[in-house]
Amino acid sequence: KICLQGSLDPEKVKGKIVVCLRGTSARVAKGLTVLQAGGAAMVLANDAASGNEIIADAHLLPATHIRHSDGLTLYNYLKSAKSPEGYLEKPETILETKPAPYMAAFSSQGPNPVNPEILKPDITAPGVSVIAAFTRAMAPTELAFDERRVAFTSMSGTSMSCPHVSGLVGLLKALHPDWSPSAIKSAMMTTAIDVDNKGESILNASLAPAGPFAYGAGHVWPSRSMNPGLVYDLGPDHYLDFLCALKYNATVLSMFNGEPYKCPEKAPKIEDLNYPSITVVNLTASGAMVKRTVKNVGSPCKYKAMVRQPAGVHVTVSPDVMEFGKKGEEKTFEVKFETKNAKLAKNYAFGALIWSNGVQFVKSPIVVKTAA
Image (tube, rainbow, N blue to C red; front, side, top):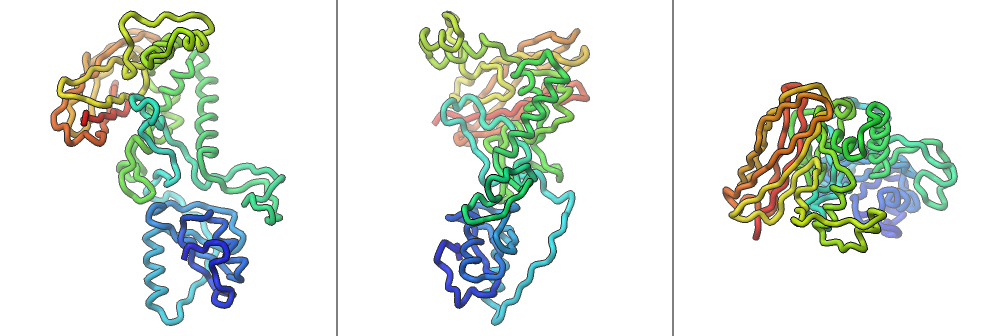
C-alpha cells in the first residue's frame, strides 16, 4: 500500500497500474518501486495528513496524483470490484480551480518557538508545482540512475515561494527607493489576503481553516502592496531595543550595533516591536496593552480602525481615528486587550486590526493566548 522499496511482488504488479499511498517514502521513490517491480503506471493517493495537496512530480513512469477523498473512493472500488480496471487520460490544464490558494501540508507552521510574541510565518506566496529553471547537472528527480536532463521542471517548497516574494521586494524598492526593508515588509504583510477565491478563509491541505500560524498575514497580493497607505516602519534602534527586551547584555549589543548601545531605562516590551502583526501571549485578567506607530506613505487622509475580535478577548484601539496631513507623517496608537472568556483563547485565538480610509485596508493579524 505504501510502496516501500522491495515491498511489491513482481508477479502481481507486472503490467498493472499500482495504487500507492502517500507517506513514509518520497513520492518519486514510490514510482521507482513500482517501475522496478514491472508496473505499468502508478496512482499516488494522498494520506489523511496530505489531504487535498496535489503536487506535480517528474515521475519515472506514467503517474497521477489524487486527493485523499478520491483515494478512499478508489480503494473502495478496488476492494469491491472483481476485476478492477483503470487507465490514464491525457492531462489537461484547468484554470480557476476552487478553492485557491490553500496551504500546502509541508508549509512551515507557527507559533514562533523562540519568541512567541512575534508571529511567524509572516506571509505566504505561491510555492506548489511551480515551473522553474533547473540545472542540467542532475536529473529532475535528483536520483543517480535517472539520466533525464531538463531545462525546466515543476518544483515545490519555500525555494519556490521565496523567489516570488524576493522579486516583489525588488519591484517595491524600485518603485519606492526611500522605503526601508521593514516598510517593504509591512507593505506586503498589511495588504495580503486571508481569504480564497471563494471569499472564504484560506484552508489547509485537509480543507480545514488554516489560520495565521499557517499563512501569517495572508497570501501576498503584489499590486496592492505597491500602495499600502500606511506602513509599520522599523529602524536600527527599534531592533536594538528588541534585543534589550530579550535581556541581551552590552557586549552582545555592541556586536550588533558596531558600537556600545545603552538600553532605555524603562525596559522595552517584546510585544511593542513595531511589527505589522500583533501577538500577545499569557494574557491575564489584568489585560495587556501594546503600542504601534504607522507612517503615512500615501496622500493626506483619515483612517478609522476596525477590529475583528479574537474569541474570548475584547480588543480596543486608541485613538481609533487618525488623520494624516502629509506624506511621511507618523502617528502612534495603543491596542488594549481584555479577557472576556479565557477558556476560548487558552490555545490561541485570532483576529485582525484593520485601518481603512475607505479605499485602502491596512490589515494586521492579531494573535492572543490567555494564561494557563
